Image (cartoon, rainbow, N blue to C red; front, side, top):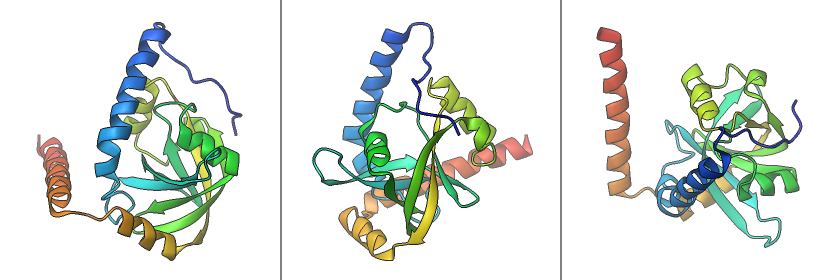
Length: 184
């Protein structure tokens, strides 16, 4: 296990950080509210990290890309470790993760290098995270199921017809692209 460390950035670090932070803020304000409507549900590539604010004590839901590796959840950190949800999870030493239609208590969160979890994601995801300058993952031990939290989150962020339609079109496009690769 790697200890918390500074994220690695490309040579032009100040410019890179500024651009990355703008993308992060855009995603937080614009895309995350939409993504929360299908994250954590069956067949979604996204999960939800439910965490408690370390200063406010409020409950927050953050959509993330998540996979499993044995009894562990693995979450890439494309924006590094200087994001609120990561800091909240580490401060509390726990969270709840919604994944593939269920919610689980997440304990013992640890920062790890991609080499520690090579089977969690396809190589293209590892490359994408590295290109983003982060190259780090959060690994969280899967605890007991907490179905009442799943109900709470999905009621707070219901799927609406427009969101469902966009998701279906996106998934259909992904399937067609994969089929095109197979037959070409």
